[in-house]
Image 1 (cartoon, rainbow, N blue to C red):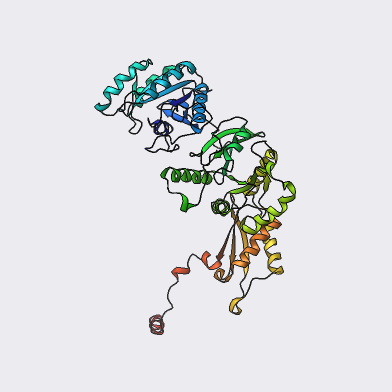
Image 2 (cartoon, rainbow, N blue to C red):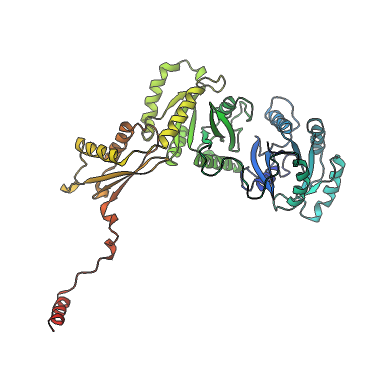
Length: 475
């Protein structure tokens, strides 16, 4: 079991910046304003040959009630109890404030091992704050600058003795954690997306069986796209919680723009996207935009209707909702529509089955022989149009790729085939090869494109040139 380090401190001392520096990527959102981070974010950190798990936490709040700040404080306290040691971060330029002293008292109660680090200490102006940090009672502070990467060697020296008793804390240079390359033991990547206050974080908490993500009645609580490793019904899964996506015209705040960008990155990284809808107001315009976005990114899609336990329609209204969905999003015809309840856990087994089936279809490959037999039958049943009296011939089809399935048809005059006929072929692929709901990429290619000498043909010789060549040959 590897060493787990929680980065704690009051707001705006640079915890997320240090987290990004340790994991080597810009995973956590960073902004000048305080209180951007709300959830716990976990990552694999490395300093030289030292490997450990690092937790980014929200800045310590003074509230202890059921407000958003109070829930954030309890989540930070939970991270302190989970971690093997706490990296207590203070702002050396601002000096030691009352919030730092309150957090120091909390760490003495909940954490046995604390390492004090004075951030933003790259200039002599921070010397006074570093000397003041001695008064917190955690020994010598480590001078670092998370933004510039200064002092990480000193932090390595301080953390190494604390990790020597841990079997996984030290790793040889070049070693890697997780599945080996080529291993089939790989996590299924699932992203949960939707409008604000649809219940995404509550659903993930119900799936993993603990209050790991911050939830509440307020809309827009989640800001970071948080990825959680888990075993869901016996299958290794990495599930991503994303920020609620509003219409682009309504997004003006910089932090919200960063949150939406982080959510879009999670969609591109995922294999299956769960579109979570509020069953009371399903298929709003923004829901359709999000579904269309996931389809354009080529991800397998499962639609979940949350808060189904509050609806009077129950199963009687599900067929009508399915018809509305296929009418509004015909490009996702056949995508699974699963009623769930994040509060009670209703429908989670059906949701997991739908995710696995969507992932299987997304990876499906069809033999070329079957595809060409199918194409011949489709052409006989409904031949392509012949604009201008010139017949278009569909000669050959093959599957060019999967994830999502992509098909290429070699034909004559592909520019003459209308979009309606392409939809006819795509719908036939969905029905005849059992590929409902998954995005399908369909390309038409002219057979002339296969001739490598098409652009290199020599011009026909002129009559004078032919006459001269005959003269030369005849002597």
